Image 1 (tube, rainbow, N blue to C red):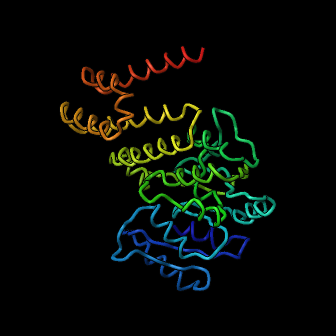
Image 2: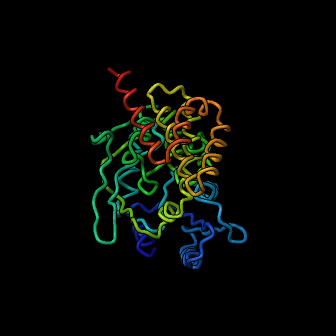
Image 3: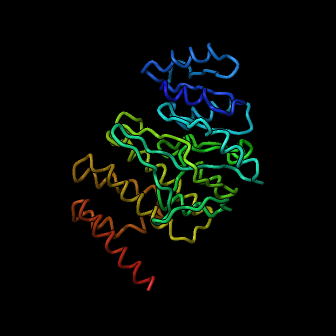
Length: 314
């Protein structure tokens, strides 16, 4: 965390305020944040939830932004590091752009024993540095995880953040992607290929713990349902909605795997019953799941869909 603090305090652009908002930490971060705020009372402001409760990233970031006063919003997670010109470089570009809601760039993915520049690409090809008009980036963000911005490498114009009503607080684990999608639907977004951030990857991260514990599947189910509704609302014609409907169904099965045969199938059916459109669409898939193990049935379903896609595309 000390490296993160130093990277912010040493920025060559100095007209900023830093809102530290603790989300129920138990690792000593609170005392570090309070001391940093006391020592830099005109620039650094510390907040925490009542009774040290944990509300999640989306809720906490929204509350932190409510406490801020700047016209431009940036984020930094506690393990990431900004290069010294991270703010000045992106701000200089943003000043030249009209009606641009956001700018983002690549990061150095930083592991304990290695590091590399994470390629920002779509279908294997690098994304060009330029302004992207709405809704150009929606299919890119949803098709390739390597093309979704990192919060620590992004700047957002506050008025556009407010127009899309900030983070969706019911989303966990993918709350940043949802924000990018809402911005990309209506506003221009600029990608710049300058690497200005070190993004630390380690086994103790909140996301890694969520994946290892299995709770990430439950978070993903909520996220995927949000994406399906978003695509329906925006009359998606790219075929993405079919992909995400299938992801929703397979995610239901991943969650149900914790239980025995009968209970797991009951849970999947319950999930389908809550979404009548999906129940009708996946009735044949569910039949396969009744007569096969989930792992085999999923492969068979995917194969059948791939063959149907080839047939319709030919």
